[in-house]
Length: 379
Image (cartoon, rainbow, N blue to C red; front, side, top):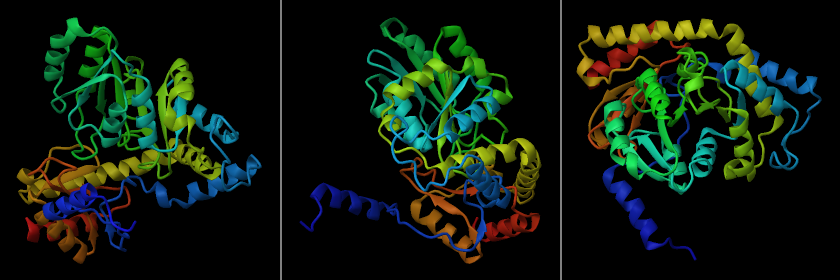
């Protein structure tokens, strides 16, 4: 059968009509203001060489793992990596998953059970939403970063909740680059005996061990999700928590149980990236912070404040409402040799389409200045 089901065809046509149909593209050789490689680790030769040394030191000359970790895939680099990751993030235990998506799917589909309630930030990542969708728990969203709205909704249901209550947020949101008041959220969860879960994907490395450990809140957070495919420039993710949570996930997280384990080289790269972060990461973080200061100075000097969302992270967003408008703006920037991607609705709310500008430690002062010269012609 060569034709597609009618509903599938209509879905594609709808995306075309809205100007939001996605396509796979190759990154051109333009100045990178798009990738999540915040510290330049993805192309770091020292990390690449060290990963090879780790494989040789452990006599692991294999291309693949050969199976899931519960079968033949649990090679000796896994416990080394998990011990390193847990210690770096001040956690009791860490369990590595194949990706941040797998980690969130595995956690939220298995840990919250029938009778439990999950309160999640309305801007939470799609992987968490998908995991919640697989859970038997009831789920309710609260307004973005709004603790008071969360309190109202928790109190409203207090007498009707017979299971556990989970609160889910991110330390740095991927599309807005902003941060909730983590101290206040942690205090509320502790006071009400609720389980706080924080996705730290965009904070790890950029903020050292993440904003939770940086603020000393790790003992007030039930679980953290950290990923290796962004500032660490590697692949995979880990869930941080206590040993009992790790044991539970090994037994019940289906995305862990039924996935072929990462190959030795991937895990060696994780170890090498953490070693480099611990030794020389502060230097790259300082360069990134300097670029962030330069960027925000340019926004202020050029009077662009009304176009940019407030953010102290490496993610800076220029709002240009309308899918066609923001795609056109991204195309003009590419013509000027800047790789800045458009974020379209429905990924973000309608009328909040934006250019998502990611800063890196390797961007130069000249590149940032030239980017704003190009933006001036667009804005």
